[in-house]
Each structure stands twice: as structure tokens, then as C-alpha cells.
Image (tube, rainbow, N blue to C red; front, side, top):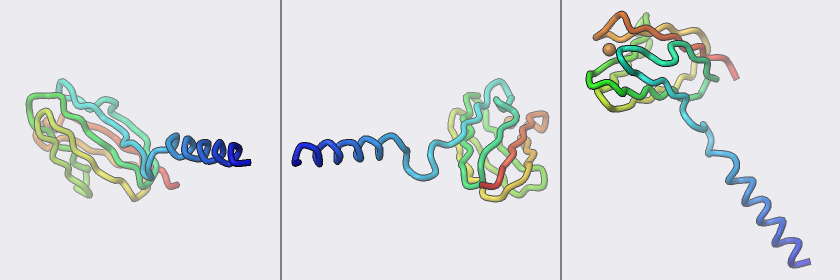
Length: 107
Ligand SMILES: [Cu+2]
């Protein structure tokens, strides 16, 4: 009996390790050579987007109607949690030719 309960406990522990903490990993968008990659992503409401700037210059992820404006310094990353469902177009204020889209779907 003792052996069985020990095995069950180990099973539960392993299961807990399988699932990441709430919120999970951010959805990553790479910035390289003045472009958001991928330029279009879909996330669930409550998920976090992480922009990873691999360029040697600063960028921003600025929502078209300025609902959000995220500075992303050179060779750094920045995160934004998106809670409202909708389609959001964004660009870089410093390089307006850089454009991206985030689709946020309701849970
Ligand atoms: Cu830029």
C-alpha cells in the first residue's frame, strides 16, 4: 500500500511539472533588419507578447490608435500582456515602414 501511494504522489508531481505556470510562455516576435517576424500573430486574451529586438537600434511597437506603445531598446526585449480581444495593427514610431498585426481572440 505504501509503495502504491508513493508512486501516485510521484505521478502527480510529474504532472504538475508538465504544465507551465499560469499565463505560460510569451508569444515571441523577433525584430531583425527593421522587420517584425512574424509580422502577423494570433494570441489568446490574457497572453503576453514578447518582442525581441535583435537590431542594434531602438524600435517601438505602437498600436495604430496608440492603445499601447511599447519601447523596445536595441538588443533588448519588451513584453505586453494583451487582455482585450480584437485585431490590432502596430508599427514602429521610429521606422513607420515597420508594421505588424496582433489578433487577440477571446478565451
Ligand atoms: Cu524601428
